Length: 287
Figure 1 (cartoon, rainbow, N blue to C red):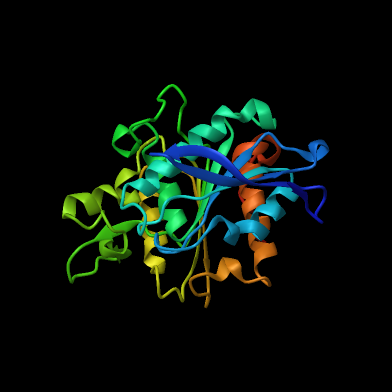
Figure 2 (spheres, rainbow, N blue to C red):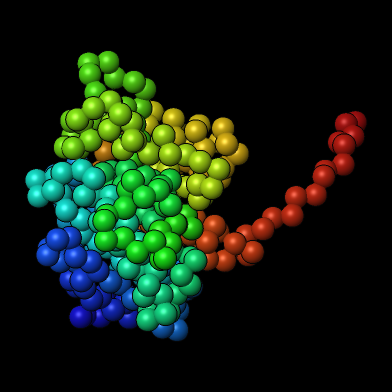
């Protein structure tokens, strides 16, 4: 356990949150100064194409949000070299339920748990948000008495549509990148978050660069369209000239995490403070 140089952020490394067949699953916990602690917790999921990456990649992001009062959890999940799909979503669901079960211990509201993911992690959090009550995405040891829903989701350059074959659909990424989801068209479709946008999908914030060569910006645009078609809440930030991975650039990170913090405050933590009463404007009289 260590205390950050930021305003008394306490970091606990490698806290065990689950067990996958005898394999302990671990997370890093970022606790804010108790005097500044908000009622909202955030589960932050790393990227890496489902084959790489680690929870350590999100350290600077998590510290900034914890410094702003959020309790942040950064879990690991099994990569496809260790366990094929759907092990990855199983682990994210395990993390959500474990975090909710610890709300009393860490001092946040169990109904105010948000998700944030980057790249492959963004795929996982969007899928988790859209399948909270779907047992097809739960591990065999899941405790259904603990809900797995999310209060809001932040998705940074998210893959939303997996496909097989030579013809790339708008916003698509090859299912072959997610070993286990590429066994059939049906499996690829089931693993695609855009196919799980239902009426109860929580508020979403999308961040994407229009110079992304890994996940096309059309992925976020299509997901935004799917949400809006159902009248759901979505904030979309498309950044001109930015490539995949821009969230990791030190020059950009503080500004971007401030956007994330504002979204969480507005949608989950203190929404009443952001209500704007829009009065009808009188018809203008032109001279």
